[in-house]
Amino acid sequence: MTKLTNLGSRIRKLRDRRGLTQASLAEKMAISPSYLNQIENDARPLNKRILTKLELALNIDFTDWAEDEDRRANQLRESLNDPLFRGTDIPIHELREVVSTSPRLADRFLQLFRAYQRLQVDHQTLSESIAGEERIKALHGAQFPYEEVRDFFYRRNNHIESLDHAAESLFIKQDFNVDELEQRLTDFLKQNYDIKVKLNSFEEKRSIQKQFDAENKILYVSKPSSPARRAFHIAHQIALLVFPDLIEQELQDAELVSSQAQAICRVGLANYFAGALLMPYSQFLSNAKRLRYDIGCLSGLYGTSFEQVCHRLSTMQRPGDKGVPFYFVRVDMAGNISKRQSATSFHFARLGGVCPLWNVHEAFSSPGTILRQLARMPDGKTYLCLARTVHETGTSYLHPQRKFSIGLGCEIKHASKLIYSTGLDLESTDAVEPIGVSCRVCERRDCPQRAFPPLSRRISIDENSRSAFPYSFEGSEEEGS
Image (cartoon, rainbow, N blue to C red; front, side, top):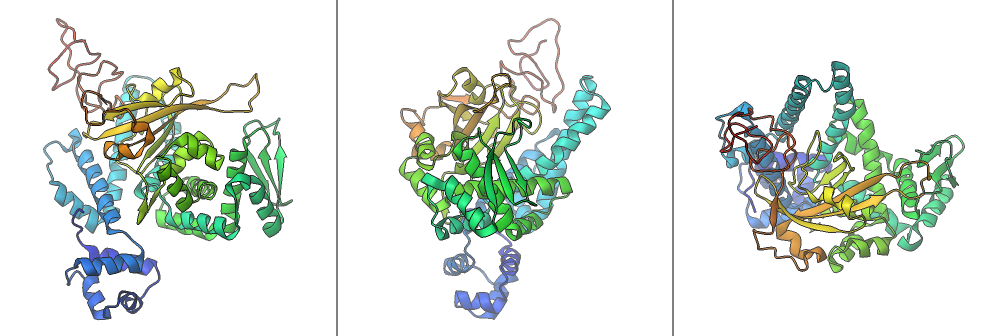
């Protein structure tokens, strides 16, 4: 485990959040309050025995803290590699210390750097005369709150502990059954809140999937939707009705800047609860491990969709009972990302399309087939990447059917736990394909699929020679137009 620093203040803050006094925590640990006071002031070294007592008393896993520090330290190092900081070389151990000592400062720096990256993209867009000033303003107004919320879920390792436990407890307390969950959730709303669930075709409002009439206590859900989607919408409403305090507490801890981001996050947290209620943590993870993360089998077992199972798999990061850390992404045919969650360090494009070499694109040419790819990112990490198409059901012939590619993946060190690794040579470097985040930020010089030069490099043009690759830029060996 990576060595953790400045634990005292972090332990004190966590104790305060749990509503414990020094005396009460010391009693749970069977140590003296003065000893705990010394620990919280970093005046007393922590041995393995005391660390174990702290983990049990606070229900935490210090391995998680170390992994989180590593992840954010690597994000800082990646940011500092930008040409903006040319010549800056800060050792990784110093970056870990920054993250440990001032985690909020590290988060604010990363937010500022990402804002800078967006401005760089806007500048490039303006210089190419693709969009005018008003369109740029509209772009920022539409995207920034979503980015803020996505960053919140990323900081939480895509796992919201309080809502996961609440959903699991409700499932067990109400003796819900996955085989008839839609009806049981419907009965729960009627019996406890006198709310009726009615199926509605929404013929005049085809985009509506769910609508709650609070005055008349009626929850309308789309009749053409699948049972899994209807159950999800009912569970979403249960989250807002039964656990509003938990959701508001999570929003408070998120420290989101804008009211728009808070509203988006509230919906996202209710969605998280809904997925956790349809697929309760302990039961679902046990089955996932037993079935070697076979998505099709899990989908059949829980009556949920391929997309719902993939999304849920990306949240299995409960301290002390973790599953394989996955990334989850949903991409349209143009390469735009509409959903992305990750418990890994996999890098996603924040603006623009995703790497054309990633198998989420190829999935559209083989509808319904799960494609496998061993892919290496620019940071050197290799992933087992899965991709499959999904499409909307119950749509009118005259209305276009929405199609997406779902991507799910994990670092290669976990790949052997997945049934999808069967027949793959996980040790072979020849089978690994180099991919990037997006052309705008990728600095691979030998990519034949490059659509744009990287923003951080100046284009190099030699009218007397021509490269086999689309763009050449400073630092590359090949030059040409």
